[in-house]
Length: 127
Image (cartoon, rainbow, N blue to C red):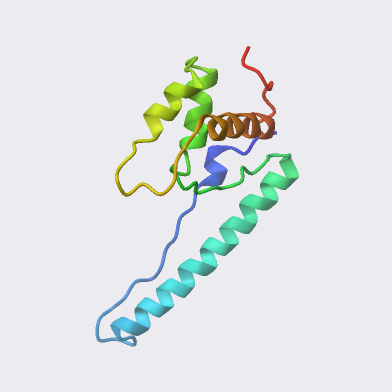
């Protein structure tokens, strides 16, 4: 069973700040940050509990050196849905510059696709 998008909604409210009454700017910023962090922590606990109860797998978050966090998902879509070759994915997502310290190669994209397909319980090879 999946989690409905409405259940994933995160909202945060605070009574706000009334200048000159009770809090300095610094005190208000500390209070609202603490309130927000508490609300966020409670939200994450709730979502994780829902995911666990319903058997939803939480994808591991990776901030790759050569890629942005969501690139892995995009690579899988490009390969599986759009039929791109791995070399074309590498060319699109890696643009070498003189200060580039990291590189993206075919094996990284291939490994990422295999791992993500396993996590999402997709066949390991494209249909």
